Image (cartoon, rainbow, N blue to C red; front, top):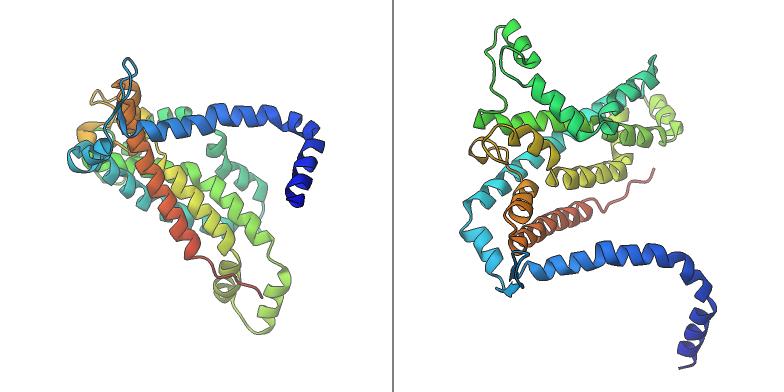
Length: 304
């Protein structure tokens, strides 16, 4: 009882501090906390904005998994996209980070070159890539393919090539961010480890495999989780690349339809807010579970 009184007295004494955090706390509750709670409740309702919400329980979730082939197509597209972009993007970023970490000239130029897509608006580079992917008459990539004897690819209209086309752009756009993080991690490893390994006769591969890679695990875990979250939230790139084809927001046969684009269509074009909220919480559940699995499988710490 005495401890509770002391705590209450201390809180009263710190009341001036609350004035400083009040603006941020109010903004957080109004624009983040309450919308998240409201969205969760709406996922159990049928709500079209114009009339009051109707409670349907798990009806939206049953509809998603058992009676909505477009949702399953969007889920499949998103999972394939993540499986394609995350491992490939991290692998190439790691190779680039190792290359730039060597004693080479123009390091800052290469860092700037690879980081430029990160600071470029998604809309800008998506439009440029649409031009690069254009038909054989105007598209630069198809022009190169034909120069080396290959046939042109209809990147935007062929259902088999829409998703790979999105993956290529996403890997290119995320390389700089991942590379800079991995490079910073490499440069924080003490050089004494490498010097000791050289004394023992280790070559470059041994030093990378037994020193660099184990000590980079915390950074690699962070890059992995952030890449997964960003990839599951694919929207702008897919929207710009596919919506202009005249085949709807998912492109030809929904071949470029990710979960977030489907959520946008249901929520802001068809005003099925309850259904869109259910999609959002399915997406949240997937990301949450994958993040937990990643954290649990990378618990071990390496200390030399």
